[in-house]
Image (cartoon, rainbow, N blue to C red):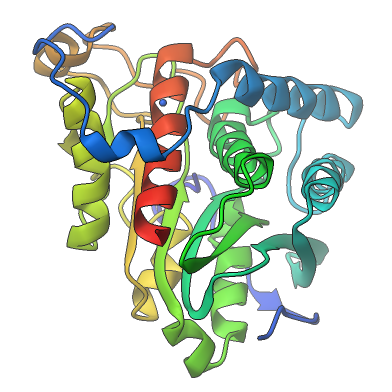
Length: 317
């Protein structure tokens, strides 16, 4: 997740040149029965998501300790994700842009079939800050979106709507990659996106369970899933407008997403609901060198990855 306007980074200007694809232990309520439709969506094994995180950590370690925009670690991360998707039968497009004097890349993956006039997108930013490997921010979102996409292929899911997955570059510089993608779409192609789901920091070590309150139908889908688990949620406010859903929302696309918290402090009331430590940040390693594979809460990652799949299957059916 990028820093706020008052934070340590400022948004970079973009000069772009590229081709564009045209056209989840709670201390709280007793578990309630899961919604009946949950059975339609597959379980996403957290071990598989974590295997991708291990690869992203290895890439960062081999490339100066980070996966930041314009650095070798970012391109190696993109190549890793793309190779998995290509082997699974996706149609992938690498979109190139320039920001802060360095070349950046978005990766778009389309699953063949479905109504091209009704596109359900799930995305995450793949870049880290330069100070660390960015495993929670945002390896967690990127890995969960990747594993959901691979599960689409593995199960040969054939939804009514068209499925598209995306990994954004240069989010940490000011949502550069996602903004470039949205701005490059024609009005007609923007109108074809029936929903964009964003996943940025979904495995914070002292997690909260936050749902974006943007599009009501998408918000309800996520809340229904967590209600089925007996996990209370709150409206996401810390990152509002600071992640890659923002350009889509500005363009009139319905958006939603999940978040487990960054630098804000968990309150006593939140610790009573969710467990964890009151008076401590949701992620004490936010934007720092300790954001490694040790900086992930497996329960939160598992729940959010499953919620991601539930939303993708439900909204695209």
